[in-house]
Image (tube, rainbow, N blue to C red; front, side):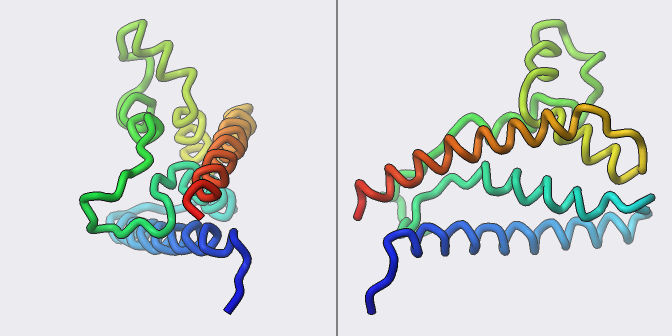
Amino acid sequence: MPISRSTVLWGHVLTSLVSNAFTVVVIILVAFHYGLSIIGGGALAVVGILALFTLALLRRLPDCPKISGRCKRLFHPLVFLPFICSAFVPTESMPSAVRAFAENQPVTPIVGSIRALLSSQQVGNDIWIALGWRFGILMVAYTFAIRAYKKRV
């Protein structure tokens, strides 16, 4: 049956989104069990930010079996960014070089936006910086994914 060339790529993207959405739902249910309370209506915006974050972190080509050792993974430094941001410790407590990096990378405004949205505080410019980073990364990732897919097909 003839299908569009991009169908496999879109299927991979949607499968990853659904898989990660299921993971986020489980994490949120556990958080509710331990006392998380969402104040205000920021939950939908948080879902959108997390979906964009998931799209930017897709690392595998379609047609790559998950268990195959011969499959080359497209690995990029974005995976390590959550470890050097304000998610775990405030940036003020970091050494100056690490603080400068942590304050000017994509994950810190995402974390700040999610925290503000879930606690019904003022988001400020963090949401726009986070969305700018996400769309920039998505455009670059989309370009590379299409090029890599065209080479394989």
